[in-house]
Amino acid sequence: MTSLTTDEERFWRALMRVIVALPRSLDDDLLRSTGLTLTEYVVLMSLSEADNQELRMADLAAASALSPSRITRVVDTLQARGQVVKRRHGGDGRGNVASLTPEGQKRLQAAYPVHLASARARVMDQLDGRSLSALVRQFEAVAKGLD
Image 1 (cartoon, rainbow, N blue to C red):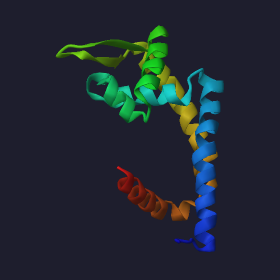
Image 2 (cartoon, helix red, strand yellow):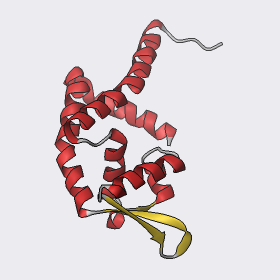
Image 3 (tube, rainbow, N blue to C red):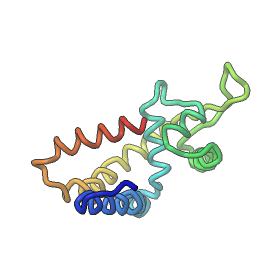
């Protein structure tokens, strides 16, 4: 049986609380201020960073960590609002492509400062800035191990 030291256990429990609670808090902040959910924000952001601001639905699902059925529902909602356009892939009739519209770009740009303010208040302001570089390196190593 593997065990953790007392400090490792405290860290692990705190990290698990953050993993569960932080997305809810970020979602609440965005929804209240912009009308976008965190999931919708992530989808718009993923499209804005893609070549030609478009992605195949499967790639968009992977980029936003959503299931195929969930990404379809989110994109359909964003399309109904005029923020995304979904069309058949030109070279492959089996797949769809989602594209960011100018309205979607506008909504994303309006939500960006709200999201950053939420991230600052809920996370960055709680950290010791002197240890931030070390935290970045350590969490990048964890993230790399998960890729």
